[in-house]
Image (tube, rainbow, N blue to C red; front, side, top):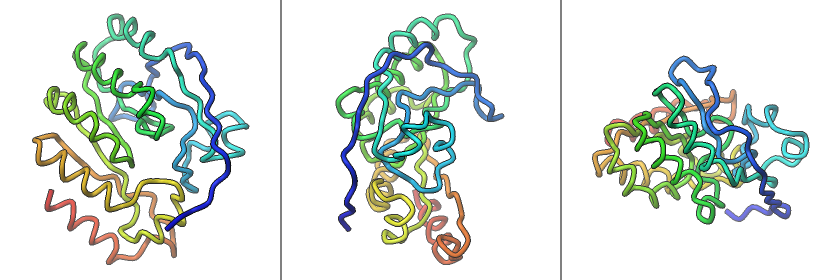
Length: 209
């Protein structure tokens, strides 16, 4: 299904820090190479955690934190080792990652400095980095958000995001390469994606990879 969208605005900015202290008990740090997200998911909690110009045009404005890996090089040597979640308020594999490679370079810096890295995405672009993820698979895992198996519902609530099928193929490929994988099912929205058969189909797929 083709979905029309406004003109995309990409801005390059300088970050003041790379690693942030996480408020989630399962993570020590978070790292967000980008601000905003081009997937445009209507339910995203991160809308309210971004500047007004990003939140007000959600899905069409993205800030690239172009110097983040330079800062991370320094922080990775100073900070106490721990678990880093990439990302918490954006997708680490926004389409522009193909150009900027901030996520890829961050993974390598963190892994070389013995941080544990957990990635969460909706994009098959992550497969580009399967070489480095496989190399450090003892300290890296990757998860995909799958809110529904129905592409029409996906298009309604995640209008510009990659297809469900592409996420499934990516998960299977990572798993076949001995990489720890997981699926995040959520949010479950009443009368939208709360069909029990749909949820069961996601769980059934998860059991096979």
